[in-house]
Image 1 (cartoon, helix red, strand yellow):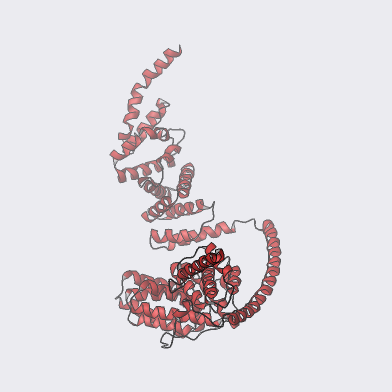
Image 2 (cartoon, rainbow, N blue to C red):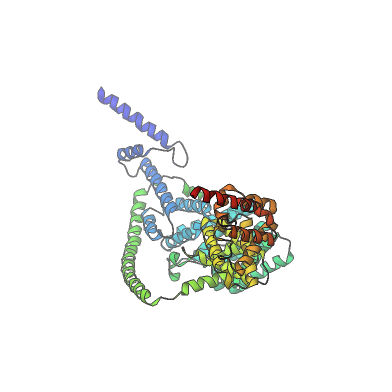
Length: 552
């Protein structure tokens, strides 16, 4: 009797599992890992539909996980793991997963294209299916005016073209379609597409590439598109002039396939027989499951066997290169005693500052230079130096310095250090350069880009000032006064929390220094700032007498 009850309970459990498994078309509701393990252990027949469904779910999860964690640094480790999965059975899962991942993170498109390029050399059916789905998705998105989807698919197709998975005819057809009846969105997508694939097209099909650029030039001259898009086309022409130095077809880390090993698919945009094979995304019972698995295991052994030998040769090569690099480092320690890197950095900063149209462009380009840590002061010095060389002060430099100061505290500290250095060596500058530098720092103090505590370096007395430093302070404060007004300036100077940094400019240690400061501020038209000093000077003799009496 008890055995019959156990049989009924076991049957009920298996029915419950089956109901969970078959609830949806794609493979059922979520099954906890411990329940999944129980199911796998309970199923003995490897050719049954239940077992195939469990392995399908495991395959889907594994492919998704591998694609989601692939990047430039680990791509060589992820690819063998991908081949370890049955990519012939799961080619639909692979294509769906990689397209979804690429749409979610466009900057990783070159990585996904490199993975597909390697897979395509061994399993061309996977590359052909992915390319077919991308073309079908692009056509659908183009008809629906779905800009986001068009951008994603064209970016992926561009990088597959660079990796020689797709033929360049497909790229040229897409560009021709986008520029046939130009709109703001279609031209923007075409510009982005051309930036990615332009270097490759220039090499393999220069005549067609020139024709596309002529069409871009015609669109620009017609002037019917938005100003922003016109500027994008102009930037594209500059990128072409620079020979796509920032947009290489394939970066060194992702150049994993030899050109003669790659299989290129001649899929065009107007192919009517393209089949995305959407049913491959869904589980389907395979009556020849065991045989197909054995066939793929043979293919996998062949692929991974080659990869292992390549890895071994790669590791031996890397050991040699490490030894060479160590030798190089040793020689560098001996030979490289010049400031060549520093001089090159200054040259780049100077050329960037002088060639930019406005301060925003200059700041953007300078941030992309990736100034080495600890060398930020060089950028500050170059901005000040360029400003001082102008005939008259240009607000361009002030706005540039202000933008950097408001980006990061590091730049504030460096500009404060520059202010102190300039003030200490101000006697070395001629009057015109001195005036420009004073106006630059006046702008930074006006906009609160620099803290006013930096004024603590200024000591207004006869011993600590020179004619140059007095001219510098005069121009500096006259500019500040002109910008914020005398009333606000006076309020700031009388701020009780700032009296210590300002004590050098308004000295109360000695009546002689106080008179000098009063006369100086009055002579430059800012006598209103000295009312507190005058009051102190009137009471100073009495206080001195009191001190003497108390000491006696």
